[in-house]
Length: 272
Image 1 (cartoon, rainbow, N blue to C red):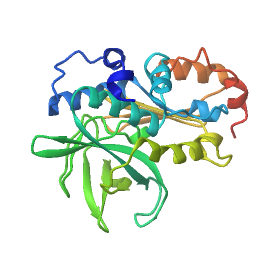
Image 2 (cartoon, one colour):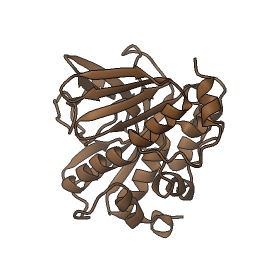
Image 3 (spheres, helix red, strand yellow):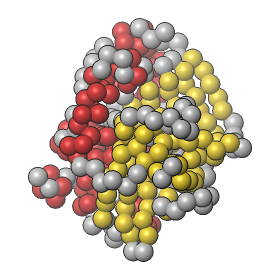
């Protein structure tokens, strides 16, 4: 089925606070990237609580648009793809190998989703689902060019024939993931999604994660630790004391509606 038959574009745009020009332009896609990352958080609460993530479009809209929830990369990417297609953009879904926290030459699974958008005369990367270092704008597909975003500068480099995305954190360039330009289809994300959201040793099953970006800071939750990274370089860190504080934090800082989540307190208490 097509996005036109199934996708409620108006509801999605209300969800991300977008009320601008809907023409398929650079300005539109940059505004959507900023609004999406401010409004729909990264989170893994379903796998953490024992519920596999579903990637059909109706489930994505019920959860991320109408349900006041977030998700991880496949959920964000497929939802955004549907919106961009509705708006008339030419979109190529891609897959990446996460290198955050790994050596540059590591070969990791294709466990990440991003999108390449074809505009007049240029190609731009948009990725609203990479957790604590997700893009809040778009990047021109070009090597070795420092590109400003609403938060940190980013760049794309050549990595053995692949593209690698890097973010400048302080004085250091840190690599988020590598990718190539092989088109993916929604079915290509089903197997890694099932693996990541059900495998007993998956960090999405065993750990708790949430992230959201605003105009001047990034919120990141990893297990019991909440970190707030400010645009001026300051970071604040604290440990959450219990499930009640966790629920308050999820709702206040990550804008997550927790009312339908059962077993959250018990699952949080099991964290080391």
